Length: 256
Image (cartoon, rainbow, N blue to C red; front, side):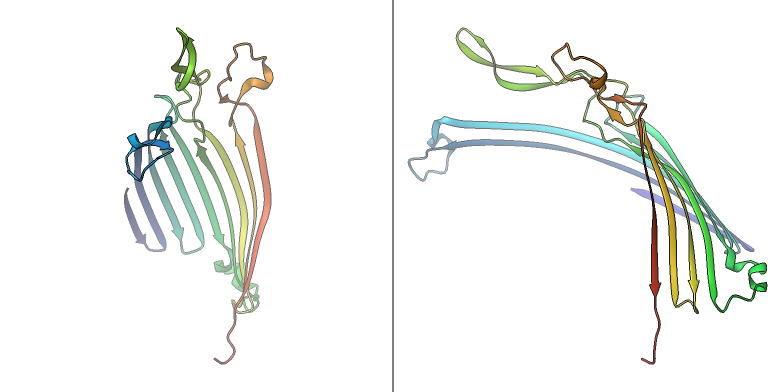
């Protein structure tokens, strides 16, 4: 992971910037073997009952990469703005569909620092008031691994040849190359307030999120004549979530 920050203040203008790059990857291999029915304490596999011997193993690998940029602006501590952008890549998708761009923006206004606020002569009660709002998009890559490829699983005793059960492979279902990032859009409005000489502080938020084009099986719209499961595809559906969130904190000191 690498990141670099920059900040500069010119008069009442403050500028900040940040760039981040991140890359992750991993691989895994495992093997297991088993026997039981040992007639002695010899700690070797060959000494067990061959009738119940089993073994297994598998390997996997994965990788993803991301780039993040952020720009912040502050004028006199009254007007605040922030722009963010993410460019993420995931190997869950086919080449050409692995990357997605997801922006966000937030704005803030500290009303209590305005001249007209001071002229209201309510500073002894209402010490601070900040209004804020934000909107952003988050990418999701929660899909089955390598669903864009035709894949097979190794299975034991798939068919009979010459009176003997033989190992083989079976299909994991149909592949779909039309699989890529889907997104969740989030909207938030809120305010922060402090009263009673900053002893009582509170925050209130209204939030709304909408996830669209999420991956689903089209099986509900088709019969299944192929004898195999249909692949996940990007849907036209969406689901929404909304609510309110608030907090209230009081602090004070009496003597010690």
